[in-house]
Length: 421
Image (cartoon, rainbow, N blue to C red):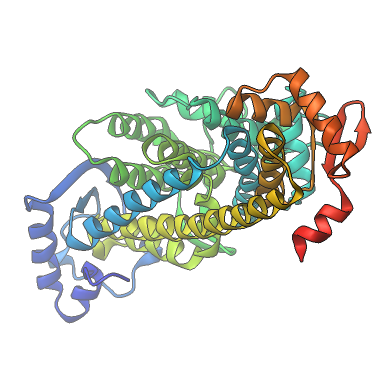
């Protein structure tokens, strides 16, 4: 945990001092009142609270723009800048391919956080179905879910202006056969009680069904405020959505998708696409931060949850940066070695694209259509010129045609062996 002390920890030594510190933090110049109301969970109490010192059983969430928070924000924005600089070295077509590769990890991690079983093969199949707009077939899950993430590539994001918009997002993410307890009877949200659990252990009970819509409208209003810093707003909004827990099932995946969309807009799409993966790796940090924010002896302070989420984002970004640097380094080495095959001009440009495919995606082959798209975007090379170049490279034994319809080429075996030496 950061050096910024929990109010609950201060209360161990002095309840009075904890209350005074809470009032001081809440009223300080660097404090932000969200006006989002919580009722602390009694289950989270660690010691009895004396009635005469009880500030209230209802708190408005607030956070403090403390030193630790500012430093973490700097790291998030700096890491995002590094990611953008690295991705600018990638051809647009392969940035898309890389996004899809990482999307498989993201969806699988998001499912695992909720205890939903899924395989990489299933998710890859769902991505193909979403791209072809085939929709979910019988027994095919996650198509709607990955489709919403794929919309990030087109700068299309869900808009939240009112409580009903949360239900619209839920409907867009899931199909009825993917959710065990779909809201029925004309209800927008659940009509019964539900708990938030971590590895099967309840850590919070969602709000009463009769106030869900009111709480989500208040959340929507908060999300559209322009007097709250962006990353803090995103983290608090995520916490509050999970606090309300408006559905019987799928709350976590919905909440992380909304959070990821916000990060994609404010940072970059790769920082967004590693959120669930990083949450899954830091489940204890996430669960502890949630429980602390809901603990009555922290008096509604959300600073700790924001700090935890920023740490999780930074860790995910660090993995993305390491991954991109390794891929780009491998590409540069392959590209340099390909020049030994005596290719010049357009031939060298085409072979360079195959080097990108191999380095970035781990493939030694690619469809001619994809090569043509990349060749035109990088060098304005026409399809006719490409076909002639591919023929020349085949005749010289540098490329091999492995499929005709649709046409696909790969680096020849002898070239691969030489490049791997």
